[in-house]
Amino acid sequence: MKNLLVPCDFSEPAINAYRFALDIAANSNGTVFVLNVVELPTLYDTTVMPALYFEKEALNDLMKKAHQDFEKMHKKYKHEDVKVVFKSEFGLVHQMIGHYTKKYDIDLVIMGSHGASGFRETFIGSNAERVVRWSSVPVLVLKDFYKGPIKNIIFPNTLDLDHQEELMRNVKALQNFFDATLHVVWINTPANFTSDIITNQRLNKFAKRFMLVNYTLNVFNHTDQESGIIEFAKFMKGDLVAMGTHGRTGIAHFVHGSVAEDVTNHHTGLVWTYSLIHEKTLAEA
Image (cartoon, rainbow, N blue to C red; front, top):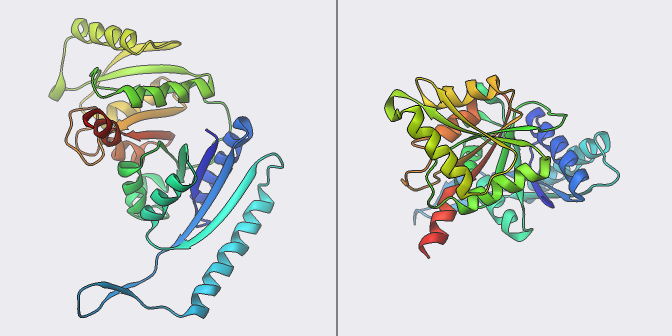
């Protein structure tokens, strides 16, 4: 995790994400890219094409204010051994995040969220949800400032053996970076119930297929997947929940509907997601 991207509007959740990114970069000799995006008002002309109207002086003031806020934040939470690059841009937030992810070869996007009051009401609105769903790199979302080791990673999975190679590569790299225990869990619900004998066979086959180390295999019964994941994470004292998300497709991996986004919204701890849409695209190429 050498290159970290933190979308930032200088709210408390964004600052929490920045501080967490600094800690990770300090341990990986990495660089933190802080991206402030100002979304311009969009009007439509007679040809129904978007047209942006703004005054240069007003935009310059916004840019100046962003740089001032960054300097204050950087000075207050400075890590002498971490390189920090600040960028302020005008445009659509999720599009600029995607652009910078590619331009600077970002390994991880770290975002702040207000949590259960509404993931869609985070500091960058519905853009956070879009980033989780569409990002080509892993996204880590946190609510509060997190300081301390990550020793237990909760990993809900459907235990399918196809189209998970990239997900597993990223999850194992995450586990290795933090030197953590991986707790693989099947959430057994009435809608997808299987017997413990069958599930344990699948769990062991999954662990063998992906050559897992330092792990536990678990079955957790609950009425629904989202609540089961959150309760299991609390039960295991998990520091981080790692999940695959189906992105824009309907492929039958772990997430059906928006489970990953719901867990990201309601879980109070760290949530790491990786979009399986990119893995399926590679597999079908």
